[in-house]
Image (cartoon, rainbow, N blue to C red; front, side, top):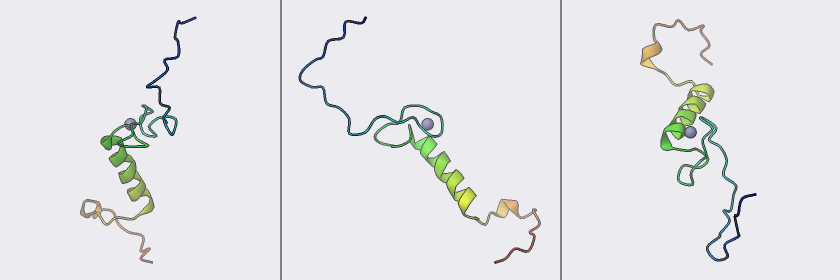
Length: 70
Ligand SMILES: [Zn+2]
């Protein structure tokens, strides 16, 4: 029962409904869609890259490879 009357005039509906940030669940912003911030955007990007791509990391040299060169 909230007295929220429709204001005619500058009531523009967004093209897309605001989706929660896939990283932290916060409402995403248009600038970093679909993330809430550049930080979460990078996190997701890094995760995607490290998960899909095998980036040669010098820090992981101590790890012995199984010889899966191909
Ligand atoms: Zn976020």
